[in-house]
Length: 271
Image 1: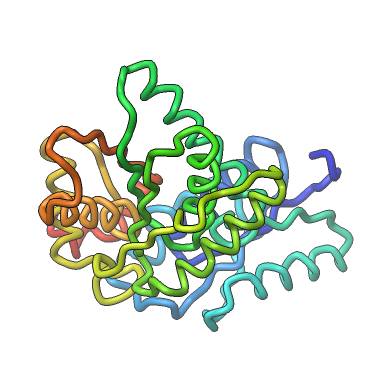
Image 2 (image 1 turned 180 degrees about the horizontal axis):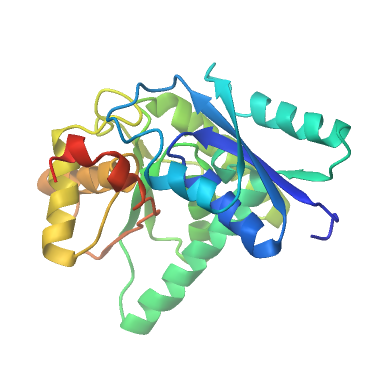
């Protein structure tokens, strides 16, 4: 708004949570919204995938969708869309894929502060913060925030992209960028990305994902999505079973959102 933008621009796969949130923000702010929707990163897992869940909400929120092919480059098509709209006379503000950038990581650093304040109020110190990690901005911000206000708490990212080294590399980029903006330092060994819980590929749930989703629903009435938080909880469950922590340690699990995608995966989940 300070830049006098009239349009928000972002992008992601068909069931992207972040582009749905960008579309929602645009609607709330009275801005136009244009989204680069990537096709080809994964095959549609169900007949409902293309039009239900987040895809339906994008349309409901008034976003204009632009289909683009997935090449592995997350931001070029989004940037190109912004440049095209600028050439057409609009004033776009471009939000990167997954809202993963230095600024996005700084925003997520405040999540660590919230956890520190709430856990202190409840009388415990978390041994770890566990979450799903993909485009890396979430983990980048948590690492920086924890270094400032939870220095004895381990931030553990569960790779959900089946690309653990790529995820870790990007986390490191955003940690350094966010730390630079905040003028702070972080421990050298602070970045931990756990592999082996992403299933066969990004966006494809496997048996452990489905088990975690059903467990969270049955015990806590907590809906998890099969792309991000479901895989994150599957990783946490596996770490607990492997004895990573002591019985009375306090572990914070971050639900990063994504419940609308459940409806796009209904047939895969057998619900």
